[in-house]
Length: 130
Image 1 (cartoon, rainbow, N blue to C red):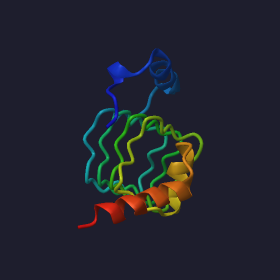
Image 2 (tube, one colour; image 1 turned 30 degrees about the horizontal axis):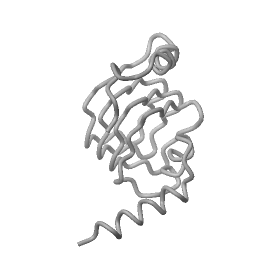
Image 3 (cartoon, rainbow, N blue to C red; image 1 turned 90 degrees about the horizontal axis):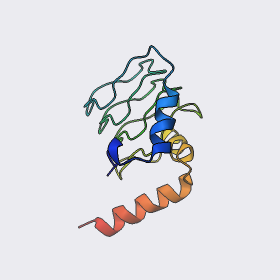
Image 4 (cartoon, one colour; image 1 turned 120 degrees about the vertical axis):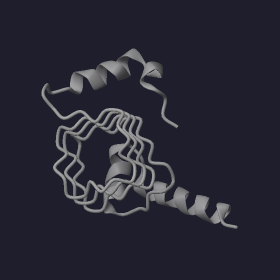
């Protein structure tokens, strides 16, 4: 699980606070689990610590969004626009994401090898099967 903001280092809090471009929509800490957010322009939206478990973010634009500490387990990210400006520190992707091109982009943005993420997911699925 993701550590609460109080447990973050000073450097991590400073990095999140420095990102804030001023006037922006803040969904920080919001429960957005299971919502259909597909096709939305979410550029520059703050979703720090938001719960996006099972949310549909397919075809949404997340450039410049701050998703630090967000929970994305089971989220649908097909054709979601994510790039180097999307803040994804401490994101919890859980085991419920299937490896599609957007998930590969998330894995790469988090500094993980997409093929290793897929391998680990397959190992987990096989070893936890009844």
